[in-house]
Length: 352
Ligand SMILES: [Zn+2]
Image 1 (cartoon, rainbow, N blue to C red):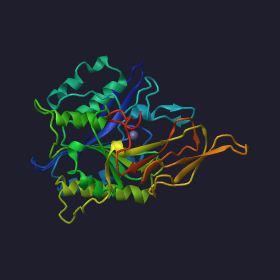
Image 2: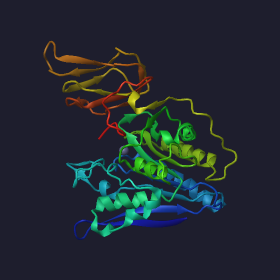
Image 3: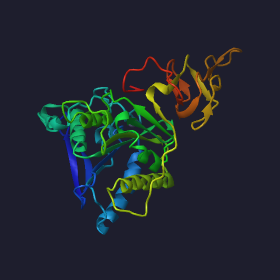
Image 4: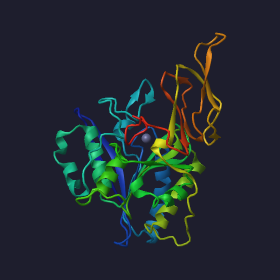
């Protein structure tokens, strides 16, 4: 194993950030290579813990000589965001300086243009340098996993159509309860990697066998527990073994049986008015159109001071807000439905 660091000099004097990078050299040049990063959104910590336990297993495999493909793991990919607290709370999702989402605005380049990412790096901002360095590192691999989490959430993933259904083995290995099939149109890290993989020649490839770029949502932000995390590390291990990145002939991955739904099937349940949220339903429950999801206390103390929010379509509650006060228009839930229900979605993203 080789341990190096990504070092990002600050935009002001006297500042420097460091992100450790762990690399394992595989014994078989024909085995797929894999890149795993966690906590690009710095306050999403399940992936950090999973990567920590996975690295423990990989070190043992390295000692036993059973690593076949090259593996790179960056278990805490965003030291800039990690250091940004605002009134006592880590922001994590948005850079406080530029107000940009740490997981947007990745440059979209073809795979052959990978090295252009690093051109004139010292003229770019620290956040831009970090993004380009992570993307440049990832694009040297076949399989790229970006570990995130949602607010209160089931285990699920965003997977570009181009990698589906080949990636069903990952969904099964991690016991995912849903897969959201995305259309690869945003500038998230995963979609920048997918863009490069799909642009390897003159034509845009519709499928890219043997490659993968995925955003894994490791449940909710508070789902960081010893047993759960170790099981997810075992899940990643099973995925790597199934793909031949590590040799573990005893392992087999069973078929994925959960739903895989296009983003247009995801109902974003919004608060129609501001108020205190009383949820009636939880993640993992299936609902029918018309079922009451939440009561909002919009005018506390008044006889008619509440409104109810109902499901508009049948589906599975995949995520729920952890906040208990909603501003008008806030997202309360994501419900994965059986049919397309959205006409207003910007390509590529559900959230800013
Ligand atoms: Zn995230």
